[in-house]
Length: 203
Image 1 (cartoon, rainbow, N blue to C red):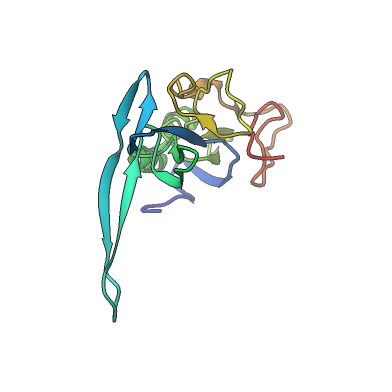
Image 2 (cartoon, rainbow, N blue to C red):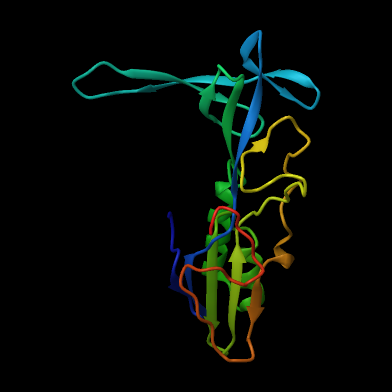
C-alpha cells in the first residue's frame, strides 16, 4: 500500500485486520443469439466494451488477449453453447483512490471523529482500530458493501438482465463501529465484526 497502512502520529495509533465484507458478485449475462458480444440489459441488447491487452514476454513473442466488459464487470467465463457469459462485479472497481485518500487521512487524524471520517472513504474490506493519547479507542468496519436486490439468491450467480442490479452502497453509518465500548477493549482477528453481518460467500 502506498503510504502507512498501520502506524502512529502525534495524536493516535491505528491498526487493521482483514474484514469479511461481501464486495463482489458474479452476474450471468444473457448473450444475443445473433451476436455473442452483445448482452441483454434493461430491455435492450448492449455491446460489450472491448480492449486488447499486450503482454511483453522476455525471450518470446508478445502475448495478446481480448478483455470484454459489461456494466457489471469483466467477463471471466463464456458458455456460448448456453448463450451466457459470467461477469465479475466488484464494488471497489475504479474507486481504489478513495481508499488511499482514507489512509492518508489517518496520518493527520487528531481524534476518533476525524479517524472515522477517513475510514468512511475506505472501499476495501478492513477492520480498522485506533487508540488516542486522550484514552479513546474505536473500531470501524469498512468496505463499500452493495445494496443488493432482495429477490436475488446471493448463494448463486445473479441474473444480469438489470432487474437485480446493485442499488448503491450500504451507508457507512450503518456499518459495525464503536467508540469506547463498555468493556474497555476491542478484540478482532480477521473475523466477522458482528453476528448480524451477512456474507453469502462464507459458510
